[in-house]
Length: 346
Image 1: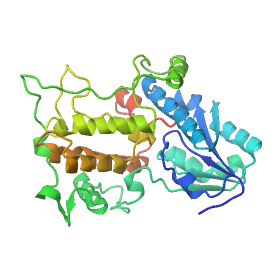
Image 2: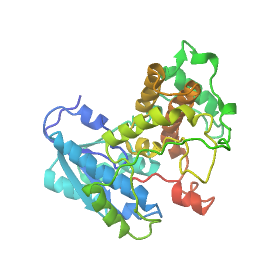
Image 3: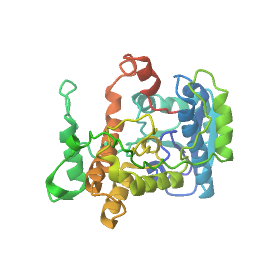
Image 4: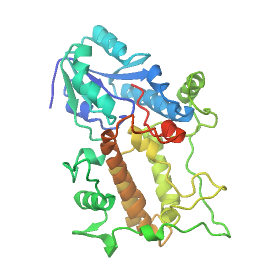
């Protein structure tokens, strides 16, 4: 455990973890958390305004939650991350800066090669543990020209994290139910619960106002109703487990013009910015299985696929994305250019 007289913990905008490894590593009271809201970074790509609203509102709520815990927070709004870092060091005089490795390759490269030069103090970059691949990689030395089969990766992760396993075998004897997830919605109709929505509070409303005035973004912030705190994200997860997970499996590929999300969880944005963790989602689904909270015979299928499978695959995406260059991602279509990247406003 590190114990320095004065330490700055720089937390990136997509690493809003309730238990952040950089904070967990620090002993002592002279710690300041730095959060940087980089307006220029946000407007670098034509992201959707609701996506930017989600990230910035979650960041501001996260800062307030840290302050409520007695943590000193320096929240900076800027057009230059480098300038914000230098200004922070000049004003707070840390002896060391601690941060967790970025999920994005470009951000991680900056941390590892240039950050210490920018701030002028020693820098420790901790391994990224936000996604499961950061704590266990079953194929760490796979050549780039030899792609990993997702099914093999999925099974290795299931075994390692003991997710719905009976020894070395999957519970129920079957690894996946892909052949069963292609059913269309019944022609007679079926009740589909809506995903949980959260009316914007004063902080979110202020962010919405700011985002509407930003140039180069898509869409609008009207009707924004996503979770922006850990408590709201956990509530959204519980609602999914109780109301939609049971039928997600068989209708996973179903499409309709009558409903926006069908039985999908709408939870991946929260995982991507740290409001939920993959194992938190897995544990919630398994608890639902054991307590009988789902009301369907399809529950075991959905539990294994949508929570264990999707959460672990999200971990894979988080760990593997850096193997694709920014030039490669986004050359196929206008849609890929708009939606391929995760927002990291730091």
